[in-house]
Amino acid sequence: MATTVNVVAAVYYHSTYGGIEEEQNENAKTLNTCQNNLKDKEFRLNELSARLNTQQSRESEFADQFVEVREGAESLEQEVTRLRTDKQILQSRIGVVEKELEEQKSKVSVQTEDIASLFRQNKKLKDDLNDCEDEN
Image (cartoon, rainbow, N blue to C red; front, side):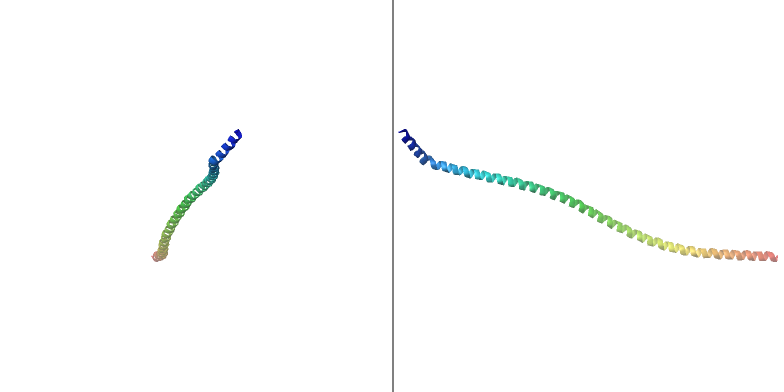
């Protein structure tokens, strides 16, 4: 009789709770699968987040370097422009100074001729004076 009661109880249990237990086991498997998928996705998300942070850091460094290089290039371009302007001014001054030099050379040449002429006149006058003194 105890065996019959056990059999009846087992049959009753399986008929009443068997479907629930199978459903619970299926739900547990599904839950485990979902948890595994979630862990995998979290891992991938963390990995992608780390890659993104690294890439953003590199891009930020590149942007900073680009700005530095660009500012340096602009500064150099301004310096080149300033130096070219200075060069043009200096070349213009050189032209003016060379023209003044030629004018001064011309004046010196004329004055040298005048001095030579005055020396010749002076010598002639001395000679004339000596001649006059000799006659007297």
